[in-house]
Image 1 (cartoon, helix red, strand yellow):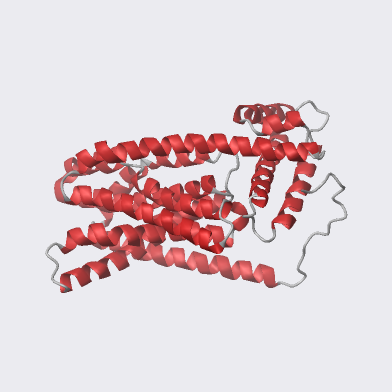
Image 2 (image 1 turned 45 degrees about the vertical axis):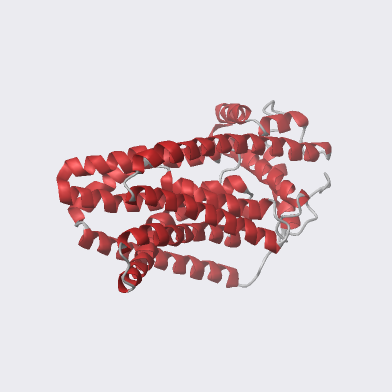
Length: 383
């Protein structure tokens, strides 16, 4: 672990050529193009399938559960908040790109079942095609974050958060289709019935399925030490996501939705809530444990570690900063807390030998940021 030596001697990495900026522009441009193309295709499908009027009304109702689902996953992310741009990107992937991909693949596979003379091609598609296709497309967003933004992916909690966002986005778009069809066929009465079943009874279905993939990728990022172990964790998480999704779809096909919901989905959801609480507590323990090591080396004090490992204490510190230093001080305190959490979780991965190759550079960068933000509060009574 780094010591408390001065940081001024560490050169900041730089690239004097315009290539990094050009690569960023090209990368964001390609991503924006994909999103806009998928959005156009999705809008075209909705306009043809349910009509713009029904789709617009359905979108309003489909948005309602998002005000519950999204905050739950953001609440889980309180210790070490993920960048807003990545949360928005994963939600949009789930809402725009994944549904378009699922429409193409599921339609194609359904057509193959029909050509093969399947007795009930619709049911076979729902149980055998939709789960692997949809969970694969949703999971791809989490995998891309892990591969392309490795420093923003610390472990299981991050995997669940990204999975929750992409799953919420997918559920939003899928609900527009089902709600729109119900309204088109049976008016407000039909829309209300589907709204109760999909938006009130099962709003966490898709996020919960995809969370299994997120857990697998989170374990691959934070626990696995070999490529084989990383692959195994990722595949296992994906397989569990497919299984839960298939059981959910099968219950609807067999007309046993309510029974399966009560006897299977509810216990699974309650188990997920318990897991979420335990993960929050584990993250707090990891922050306390590894920041204590930095405190022993002189980067922090142990009272500061106690504050940084406690959500109530962190809120109090931000309130103090805002009251005494205004918005700038509150932002600096928030940055200090986020940096400290990042640092502790990075140290955990280093100790577990699952950290990325540039973890040492990242640690020095975080220590530099920690020192800068902490200097604003040392001796003020805030820390």
